[in-house]
Amino acid sequence: MKRPSKIRLGVNIDHVATLRQVRGGTTSYPDLMHFALEAVRGGAEQITIHLREDRRHIQLADLQLLAKKRPVALNLEMAASEEMLRFAKKYRPDWVCLVPEKRQELTTEGGLDVVKGAKRMSPMIEKLQRIGIEISMFIEPSREQVLASYEVGADAVEFHTGHWVLLKGDKKKREWKRLCEAAKLAHHLGLGVHAGHGLDPEHTRKIRALPELREVNIGHFLVCDALNEGLRKSVRRLKDVLEGK
Ligand code: PXP
Image 1 (tube, protein in one colour):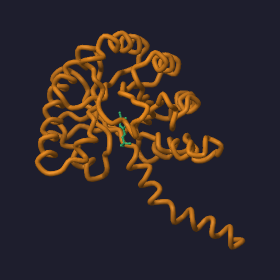
Image 2 (cartoon, protein in one colour):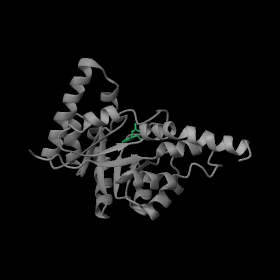
Image 3 (cartoon, protein in one colour):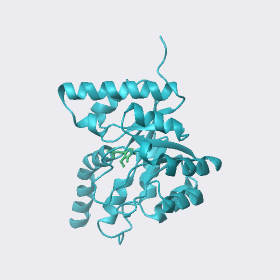
């Protein structure tokens, strides 16, 4: 039997920064680098961050520090803008994942429209690849978007799994079929197959069956689960302080 190839785990630590930024960055905790290293100790092969235009979580200083220390590969999710291109050229992450970005959205709600943006994205991708950065496109699992990603010269596609995760019944089955077909096409064209968004343990188990999957990027569940696992101990610590221990 053919052994399934290894799936790389990218841990997205944006929401560690979200918790810091709700106090405007005035606290020294949570320490992003500490959590990046904890993720690596747990087995993360990549650290993923999204430097958003509105800087709601990750700040430029975080990118600077992670790029310098780089305990494992660094994957920078970013909008295809001139400002972000400058940062990527300066800090040289191992991967850039191009994502769509709207200021009002709660999270990255849909995939990138590579068909529409091809003219603008192609030269950007070329400039980044010339300095050794690999490029993935965060897209919906559609034939058109996979073909356009190939046309613009990307190295990989990351399929947006967020809708599939939320769907139920027949609609979920149809979306899974769409994901599988898009993954096969991407692989056939020589593109790496990545996936991410909304993955929890149940869907992470299922996504392993996606043809040719090489990488997943997971954030929100992991940060929430870390809170679940740790709060009792943290409360105990402060109770001890209150009790003069
Ligand atoms: N991949 C991409 C391109 C994303 O934009 C995000 C969300 O920032 C993720 C993966 C991780 O999604 P989640 O936080 O839901 O696990």
